[in-house]
Amino acid sequence: MLANGRLVAASAASTGLLAVALLLVVFWPAVGYFALLLLLLSAPVERVWRRLHPDPA
Image 1 (cartoon, helix red, strand yellow):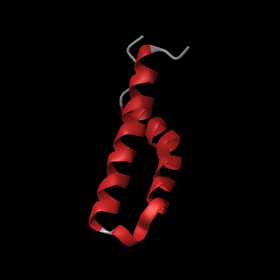
Image 2 (cartoon, one colour):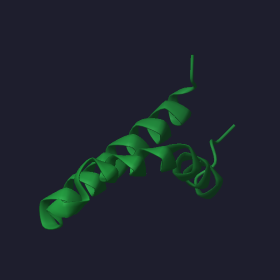
Image 3 (cartoon, one colour):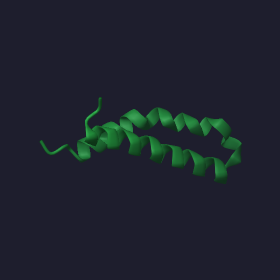
């Protein structure tokens, strides 16, 4: 199981990228399902988040 901070970072990354994909499709409908490819960036975004906000231990 993921530690609490890692779980929050993973959830926030996925949720944020999904929101960006939704906004992209709403404002530029020609993108279609290709906007969901942004979700492939969730792991790199999570790593950057953890690097900027390390767990206090």
